[in-house]
Amino acid sequence: MTVIRCRASGGVFPHDNIEIPDELVKEILSSVLEVPDSLFISADKRSPFSFHKQSSGGYLLVCSSWHRVGAPFLYETVVLRSKGQMQALERTLNEHPDLVRYIKKIRIEGGHCDSEYMILESAKNLTDLCLSFELLETDDIEDLWEGLAVVQPRRVILPQWISRHKDSRRLELRLCELIPRWQNLVRTFTCIGIEHPRA
Image 1: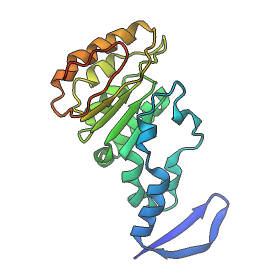
Image 2: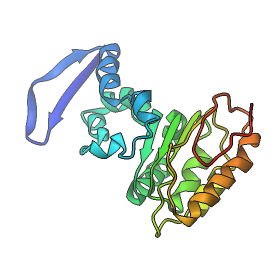
Image 3: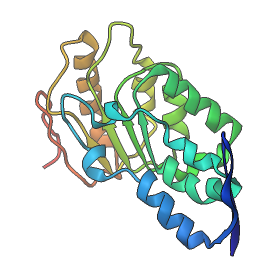
């Protein structure tokens, strides 16, 4: 049995000392932290994650028990939409390297920077990778380029539409080179502009 002490910025909740089993905390946090696969693989023009205004990490700040139980759910699916998010995740993993083992799925929508390689290289338990070809003129995809060579995903998801950015085509060709090397890949995918090399 775990004693959960719930605190907020406005003070202590009325029921400050409530004994809640880890199993119940797990049910609570999994319902709000787990990312449905339908959202993870979404190829909508507007990302479903663009509607999220608050960080899910706040749930882990309730107390140490919530952090312990919730960390696997929070880091299982990582969605990266900006350079700031990339850099923040890199700092977190450098400070708490034990968290990287929870990362199973990574969806990269933007924010390409030099943090990208470190994140991909360290995610040894990565199984699912979702990439966006929507690139900005300021995006530097060299670290993504190198990072794709060190992962071994079981499933890769690509959008159904392709950006006209010059590096998008390079990224397409890079993926065509790497797909045969991804020995763990068991799920096929389709994407306009790319011919899947596997039957």
